[in-house]
Length: 330
Ligand code: ACO
Image (cartoon, rainbow, N blue to C red; front, side, top):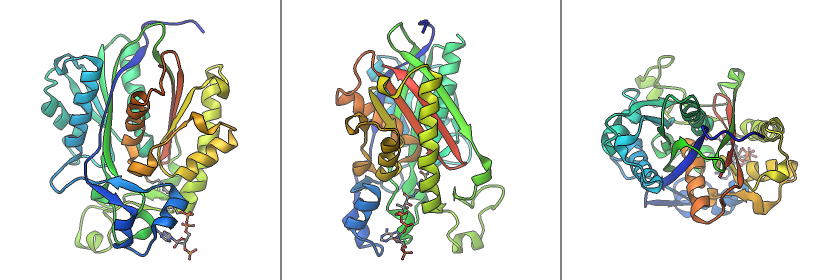
C-alpha cells in the first residue's frame, strides 16, 4: 500500500476515571443480584461513578488535557473539538463547548457526535477527514460519559453494566509510520427500539408520566442486543481487514467496545483471534459507552501493548443501531 504522509495519526492519548468505585458487592445490596452472576454474565467486577455535581465535560476536560500533554500540544493550537457522548451536560450547548472553555482551546470549533457506543470512532473518522483534507492540523477527539446519571439503580437487568469515564485522543498529520489507515461506519435504524433512552427528547418530552414510568433511564432488550452485537461485530471486523487488503493475522491488537466480556470473547472465538491479542478492561470500568475505546487505547499504550508500526483494530457496536471500526498503524 502506498504510504501518504498527509494522513491523520493519533499523536496523544489521555483518560480519566472518577475515583469512586461501585463494586458488584455494592450492587448486591441495591438489587436482587450476585457478584458471581454479574462476573459470569458480563466479566464486570466494578465500575467508576462520579460524585454528585460532576458533569460529562468535567471528565472530558481532564482526559483532553492529558491527551494534549501527551502529544505536547498547547490547547491554543487545537482547531476542533469533537466529543462523542450520550450523556451530554445539557441538550445544548454541546459538551464540546463546555470542554473548550475548561481547557482554554480558544480558537477551536466545537461540536458533539451522537452514535451511542459506536460514537467515538464516528468522531475519530470526522477528525481524520478534516486532517486528511488539509483543512485542519489538530483535532481533539473525545469519548466521555456519565452513564450513572441515566442508569436505573432499581433495575437489575441494566444497572450492573454501566460506568462513568472519559478518554481523549489528539489527531495531527501523521508520518510514514504512524497514521489512521481506515475507518468504517454503519447504522440500521430498523432497531431503534432495542437499545435507547426513551424520554427527554422531542418525541417524548419530560413529563410527570415519563418520570413515573422511569423513561429517563437506559432501556434495552439485553438478549437481542447481545446476539446482534456478536453477529454484527464479526462481520464488521472481517470487512474491515479484508477491505484494507489485510488479514486478521496482520493485526497486533484488537480493541473492541467494552460492552460485555462475553460479547468480546464470542466475537474473537468466531474470528479465531488468540486471547493475547484482545485488550480488555471491562472488569474494572464496566460499559462506559463512547468512552470505552479511548480509555482502552490510553491504557494499552501505557501498558506497552502498542508498539511503533503495530496495526491496531478498533470496533464498536451500539444503540441506533450503529457500528464503526478503524485500523490504526501505531
Ligand atoms: N442478577 C441476577 N439475575 C439477573 C440479573 C442480575 N443482575 N439480570 C437479569 N437476571 C436474570 C433474568 O431475569 C433472567 O431470569 P429468568 O431466566 O428467570 O427470566 C436470567 O437472569 C437470564 O437473563 P438474560 O437477560 O437472558 O441474561 P443474559 O445472559 O443475556 O445477560 C445481559 C444479560 C448481561 C444484559 C446481556 O444480555 C447483555 O450484555 N446484553 C447486551 C447489553 C447491552 O445492551 N449492551 C449495550 C448497552 S447500551 C450502551 O452501551 C449505551
